[in-house]
Length: 321
Image (tube, rainbow, N blue to C red; front, top):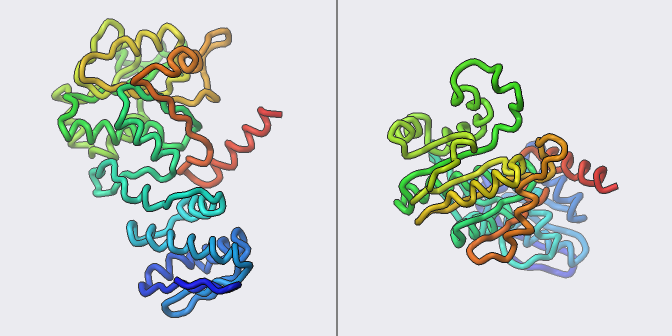
């Protein structure tokens, strides 16, 4: 790659890479030109960048990152492009290669689960280092999914003997008693997001096999009372809906050789008015305790539809005003 005063040139031999960078009807090229304030021209095996020297230099760095993304996953998704542009424009050190080379686990369909943002990378690294980790942030930041992927990998590596996934069924409220079936059947609808993620990571057949052997347990938080959870990877999801008493009860269940991951979004509390969220309280109680880490994810770490990020930012602006 060579950079002149106002023109850059990056060589790309692979036609698929050129195609993915261009996007459907050159949509990616237009996005790069608009956000980086440059002009791009595609040749048979290269892309020429024209603009102010600083913008040309950033765009060449961006194209180099995009080449590596496509090399690793054979495609360039809109969220990958947008995150790469924001990352390059932020002027931060490092490379997106750090994310693409960090494989958490392989799903049943052969898909590699990796952190997609540096916030997610910090989260995954923390899960590897600490026995108790709080992942706090808005919907779509991968808090629960990445924790499950780490749990499955720890189980496969025989670091733990079982996986326990739990969440409070606060959303059910008093209506729980009117639902048909036993207690497990009543709360299953509120555990559905956990089942969906497990089915994707493990596959339905493998999940059912492990479930029947008691190696994987998905249960409401009430089932945790009075137990000691040894050699287990325990994930508490939707922790913003725990009370202070429930949070303390959960954290004191941890046995030898176990890890506890607590995920939640303190902007989506469903507790009845007057009840304090255990997740909000615990941040002040346990901050700085050795072996415990708090990772705060933001809208920049959202990996769902790009509109989700805009919606959350809009709500944060509205609530802040």
